[in-house]
Length: 198
Image 1: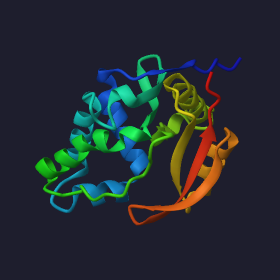
Image 2: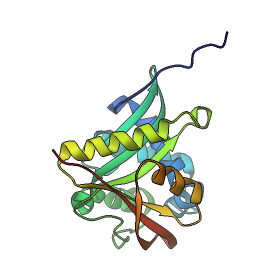
Image 3: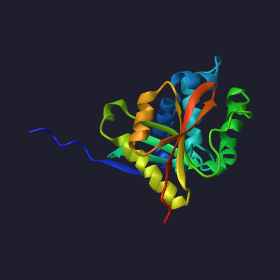
Image 4: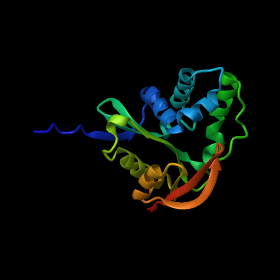
């Protein structure tokens, strides 16, 4: 008889999840994007330490307080970072200031990726060993519930136009195309999912 698969819990992140969450954020960003941020004079390990520090604090877009995780017992196997688009500039300050002090790079002119009126899904990733189990879909549905609790009428995200499989996932849980966008030099598609507010 086949062993039962473990029950994956979807829960709010905790400060002690920070290192795992930072790894998932970097996975969602891609190696190329991370290297663009930390540059030739630094390493991925340094960038991971920096991102971990941003997850541990409360006033960062990458904060554990903005993160929902999927957990197999105590092991974090997936993460979704999301926040109120109206707070983007306030939350991004920690990243911009940190990049200047740690890596000597100024990203104060970085493009806005969201705006007021949507819960912005910044980063989503699942451990490769746990994929094809519906975990990403469960995290996306949990984000819609989070938006409803916060009174935000829609959930939004940017997906790279060269990643149709990711777009298919988002569409499968109710996201629809809104407009084309460009972020970080990449052609993106802006998708949204409406949320029924009670």
